[in-house]
Length: 286
Length: 343
Figure 1: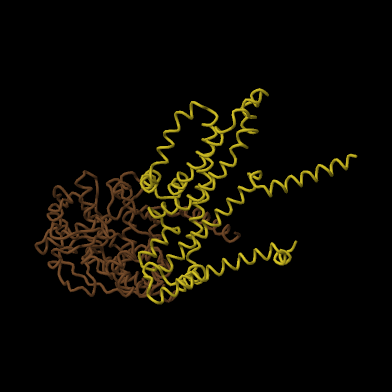
Figure 2: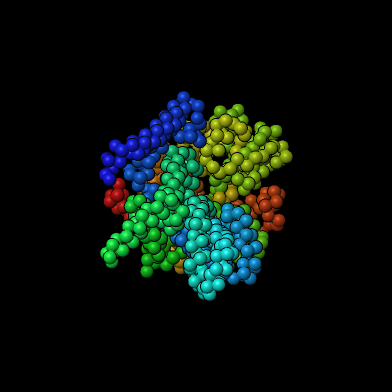
């Protein structure tokens, strides 16, 4: 069905109303903010005029275009750190989940690592790994490691005992038990862990950039706030918010694909498709 | 999403692009800030190709860590570090094999400021008042200033107001503290944003080296050519400001546009940087042995150092001579040619 068709349909009409309400709320809030600034109710040192922020967007993204390399660097740090940290977390959790003894000895260290504040450990990582790309990635990795690790481990050890017994009774190998039972059971939790990790990755990259970096959105925010250019600082902060939002939505989509059985509509659609394919196959044979 | 993906690729390319060019040797310099007009000799030297002429690519390591910069010299991550006089003396007292090779700022940017609307006009009037410190490091600045007027820290109440621009500006504007101890760049942004600031800094505070370049003995011996080249390129960048500040401003605008979005602030920031960075001695970056001796009793009094050190132990004047070994007329001609092409 076309988009126009969607909008004209009762469902499309409802969607349009929701969008219009969102736009209305947003415009009202921004207008109230602008009026409060103009009337002097809000301190422009802390809350710049929305119109100035809008101009700032134009300046940073188009006229000067100076935000792009910083944005690119921060995103690269986030993505590389997230992939490496999550892969390490999930990988280690799988090893630990498969070997009881390893689990007993490793867990306290992982918990201690998690309990250590990132802002405190950041300078130590910079001192150990240097000022370059490695240390920033290491900080993001550290931030992204824990949630996938814990969730994967919980998912793996939380498999129902009855199902495990059944796999054993059918003489399934360790690999088969892992691939056919533990991994699918843990996937919803792994996916939730990945979403948490991705949400933290942005914060980790910013901490790294605040401590020691030549570029990145953290550096830009520091520069702008120290020169009281609050409108431009807000542009960077809002850019980060938008980035965080899109990343989170992206992870939700990934979750819908990876753990499709958690989404009823999607499961129903997959079921319908399979049913149709099965019927067609059967029809073809008859 | 497509734009975001492209930006990420751009970021990755930027990281890959950080690899040094084949014919240049990387020289690692740890400093408190990113490329900025505050250290204009670096950006001018890079823009006019002075570092390249010396076969050097400067890998700037800007750090806001609480870890002393001298550690990065000792573990080999940095070849040269920008240290203030207190950091130098503390490191030397701790037995670090440190050599001060160049005075980047021969007067300290530290000072005591009050709101332009304040009735206070001298540090002696601070008795019984609350003094804000931009960071805890500024406590010594305040102590020296109070001492110069016969007061002690016990005569005032202190509070750390933080480095964040808006918090600092609000403290000035609302006069929640009677005075603030900090450094030049801290007030410049506030002034440029229409909040009047008045300096009441006693002479004793600024009469000390603000920032120096220091290296460990290994660098002095093994990387002498690179070190001399680095300092010579820095000196050339500094020299440009003495006869062509407009060229420096143009380079700063192009290199760090973030500092020039408010042009008034950008210009004031640069003017202050030129005042602090251009050497007052005949020799650019020259080492003032007498000053290093004179500042130590005060630092010892306020517990910054435990014992005084003979400046001969850590001042290494050798590279300064090489740093000044360049043809001024040639630099002037190059700058004029650059101006003709770019302005």
